Image (cartoon, rainbow, N blue to C red):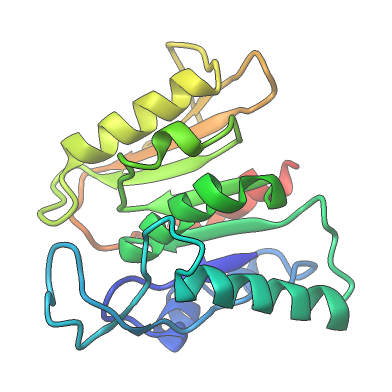
Length: 205
C-alpha cells in the first residue's frame, strides 16, 4: 500500500498521520518522499516537497514509482493482485495520476482532498474511496464532487448509496467496482477517523 504525502509534507508526516500498520498488520506500507515541486495552488516557486502530476512518461515521479515498485517486488513477497494507493491533497492528485497512467497495477485507490480533470478520460473502472471536506478552502469541494461523480458513473455505481457511518457512503457497482465517498464537515485537513474506513475498504478485496 502506497501512501503519498501532500504538497509541503514529508514521508514522516504521512506515516505519523496514518499509522495504517496498527489497523492492518499483514500489509506492506510505503510512504515515499517527494522532491521540491511547484504547487498547483500554492508554492508556485517550487520550494516545498510534492509530486508532479503530468502524464508525460518522463515525469520523474512516475519513473520513481516504477523503480520503487520493481524493487519492492524483488525484495518482498508482494501480492501483485492487491496493490493499493492513497494520498492526500497533492498526494491524492498523484494517486489519481497513477490510476490514469498505471491503473492496471492497482486493485483500488483512496485519494483524499484531491481532484482530477485532465486525466479522467484515461481512468479505467476501478474501486475507489474519495474523501472530501465540505469546507475545503484549497481543493474546492465542487471540483472534488465533479471528479468523484464522473468516476462513480464510470464504475456504474448505483445512484443512491448505503451509509457505512456518519460520513461514509458505499455505492455498489454493477461491474464489481464498489466505491466509497467520505464527506465530512471539515476543511482541507485529513480526519484520522477515515483511516479505519480506508483500511476496511482495501481489506475487502
